[in-house]
Length: 445
Image (tube, rainbow, N blue to C red):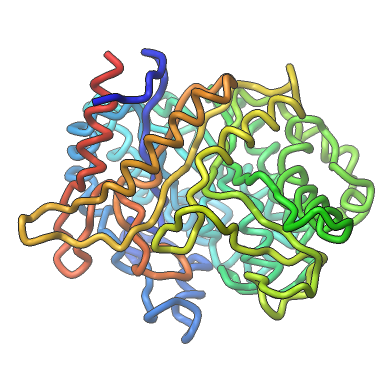
């Protein structure tokens, strides 16, 4: 088989997130998260699904690590549930919660897999949200306190660290338009959420390093932005989207400034001083990529965000294959994005990891007991080839995700995993894509 040719030291990984797979939401002193609250509200999640059980990874992690060992991955990107470690988001650690991640990390190391830990993958303790959540500057300090606790406990064994996952999604979907927890609809009033997350990230980098942790980055979602037409109105809308969604979350970290004076002016607190903390140097920068963004002038119709007052309309890119989630499959978008990052930041750009990329197809276990998902194989194959074609310094690729799991507002309808999960029985069935990824990894030797 003709596999993408990647360096022998290239990191092949898989990824997942605590609320999406762990379940056990009331076990061992875990506190309530905003996603527990949000999923309990009628109408928020498709089919009324919740992460109360999810993939039951909390109890089945050994089985899941065994699957990863058989897969042959170099690293597993998981997230730590803040409410397990600090049930109310501050104060003393919950030892039983930390013990779980001790066991998980040790299991990974015994399997020869590098633990890659994300500290915040969206499951904010509800008590912090009650105090204002990410609109409250104090939450940034709380994230750093939590980072110090986790770093002190796991820093001797975790090989990669990410304080934040996709701050743009938290800002836009959690606080601006309200389709994710905590379900706020603040519009542009959500911009302080971006700043406080970035400040929390910088403070957490400092806190992790103070405990001796090394190899620290971020997992930040980005997309090449395409104007829907060459009209001045569409190009202007695309420029606004690009600044808000891409560069507001990368420029402060990599340049120590916001991309536009108007954005900077909307941020709270001593912004200039904060930016010095936000720009704490990273060992690498993680990019999560799924699809390009096609942007038109506001009010032009066809928006994916109906009823939301924003200075742009976000549309579906046409002329490309679609996943069963309706997302466009555009491998060259990843190449374009990587080249754009290199051109924008030059020598200030550290090595890159693709910390997430994946696709949802509504797979089923067939009469032969197998899951034939050639479309997912094609997706990962072509995106890895796009990484090679970019000629940018990319050190690794984390497939999203190891398991089918709870896909936020979509509940259990979307399946991104290399391993199929029957949620009624918790039976795991490796898909054809799992075997392809295993063979790809072996081909590197």
